Length: 334
Ligand code: SF4
Ligand code: SF4
Image (cartoon, rainbow, N blue to C red; front, side, top):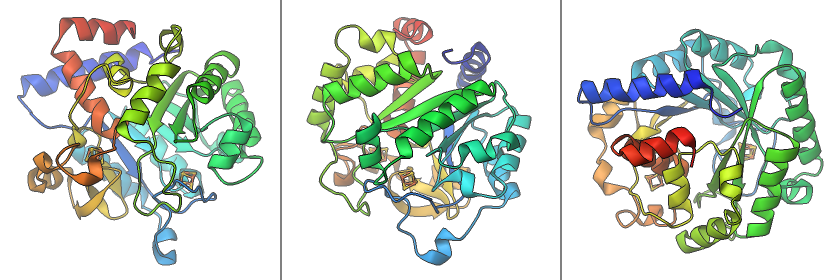
């Protein structure tokens, strides 16, 4: 099942509304991080290096919901850390779904089967399960054996219980077009997940493994070769066609970091989920007090190798709304 029609229509209406109101900057999706603690310690992770007293903190339900309401984004991706460690994560999801937000709950799936009964299937809710490759590749990426098998079991359990299940796969320099194809073929054709998100790894300064982050040219070559043979059209990728063109180097785009902002225990993170140049108390303050022109490739050296979806998917979506051809491609996913 691709993006549900209800979701496509709602997002289309939201974009049209922003245009009518002549709003130049607005959020499409919020990356909500209600905690930083995790039950894994992946070598490429830039989120779990906080001191113990920060790792122990949990965002109250009211704070999480108020932040999403204030900014008005129609979609929320809940990450962390591992959100299923948060004792009230089900309540956060329930309250966001009740407000008709489309919620993706990103998880490494270790706790998923145990917590499944706390959640209810809904067109507004999807699991987003972290799977970086097939068994050996994924277990290597998350630095623990057995996690791949556990995640696959969790996908099947969630599907059997009637949930939408999507996946999130990050690629590093030790991937090849072949490993990209293997994992996406598996997720698409064997696990039959609803949709798949892909991303080249961002070079977090704090990540213990600094050797395996892809540069722009490497990313383009990797995806160009992996998308060959018509696979890109066959896979149920949760991205706009223009963003996929960008990943494989057919077009270049500039970053639109305000489109997918990040809200965590510290507030609204400037400028994006990946970099932390301070925090704002509200989304409005973030918009008004950030020098957005200072960020993006060619503007800030920390952005030079970034092709992450949080910066470039909003650019692709907004560009698609300005072109009949691209809008049609987005509808047809071609
Ligand atoms: S599962 Fe996610 S949050 Fe946890 S350590 Fe790995 S990358 Fe970081
Ligand atoms: S290019 Fe954009 S999304 Fe990427 S790190 Fe820089 S500001 Fe963030």
